[in-house]
Length: 614
Image (cartoon, rainbow, N blue to C red; front, side, top):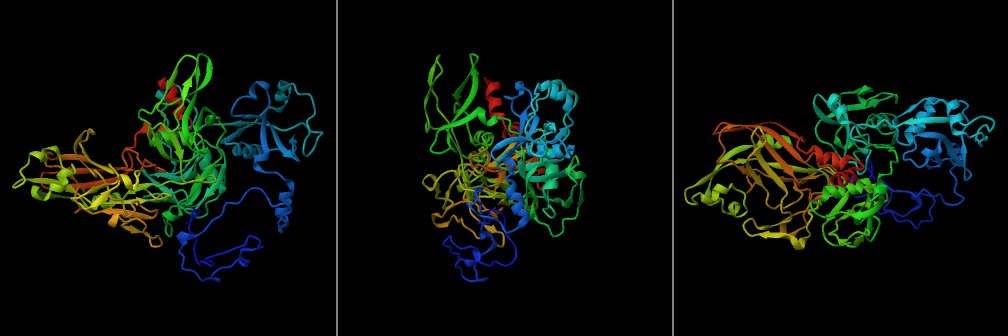
């Protein structure tokens, strides 16, 4: 299913059948070279085990040399210098040690440079390094023994210090005074659509508008500049082919060329022309992130596997750290997202408020039965996670908006579904009318998995007026607000029939509402609700002329998990003169609450929120 991105050119093999004993894929059975009815949406991928087959050797001599060194990323560590620091997380300074033949050994400082320190710091999630006084540290450690070294045992070991300068919205608390005197500057770069902290599609702010980066020439050096700019270490992976979801809007940067020492990716050389690029080529990153131990403050218990269960929080009670549960009041998908992200499990699939994993917790002073939520992760394959991402086509709303005065006798179905203002109940069916602000909506799924309704088919509701099943109680909100943000009129899809109206050229439709068909929106497809469909409007009969804000919110109650909620909101400026209406400056984003976004992005936010509430 093109999980790692769609390829290009010829599809060489189809219906491949191997016994597992072939020395090459070419030795497996197939339709024959180039004989295929597949599309690139069906391109296959593979995730290999990190364990080698015994006795297996690469033919490439250079790779053989590297393999024979037996040095992997996981075989490097920073050992704390002072005993008082050894239990602290993270370790930010100490001996650099490498595992050699099962034994940890220190590195000789001969030819050691600040660039070497920068590499090590980046691997452990820190954005930069700082020069360290090795003579002073040798005295402070009191370690007079000669350690074993890989290169030159006669030399003293190299020591270094990491500087974990946190980026915005990370783990560095600032005093209220500092915040008041020095408000943080608006970041120029952000990550969107990632399952875990420190990963996502790279977006850049330019001329007041967020846009994406084309993956031409995208590499680890440029990706590391992004990671360090955001307060992380070096890049673990430079991701191409929109594998963490497609963005919307402009493509700001192309053919980026960084040296690796720029403070911002906007300081690198790049091409502002994006000709030949599209959002299928959006660049993304996975950064090395410091091991801060946040995942140890939460746990899931009672589930059938490590990815689900009752949420338990470690908190201090009477001077002792104890595990306790979380009440289900106001518990929802966003809170489950925070738990899953803090545990490093990716996106949440569902948030339950039922007694799936109930257990009494007795701390010696009370024994209460709690109504316990479940945070369950979904779409998990190894360490890869995916989720849908719905985005409204703002330009289409602006182009299709108009007013219609519609007789009440044609609005009986809409009245039944509460798609009209409350005053409509007092309007004459024979002679009355309602003034409707109508528009078309085109909702794209730019994520990595299909958008499916929360409720199964057994819970869908048949509406006799409109002759189809509605799968979601509330899918969108349509609101007209005055310039102070007060709602003056509203509309909504009381329920929704989700289907693939149109798709990209190489994507097949999967969902159709007719005949009680499956409902959803496939990745690369969009659901179109035309302006002339019932309830695709806001009833503005009682609204006086003036300037307003028009707002559309998709999945407003976060019933279905998405990789990015901040693009679920569209806003337009609107002017109504009593007879006509103008819609302009329609754009995505801007209404996702700062509190919710911080809660979703911060790696230990749930623990902080619960402790502050306590």
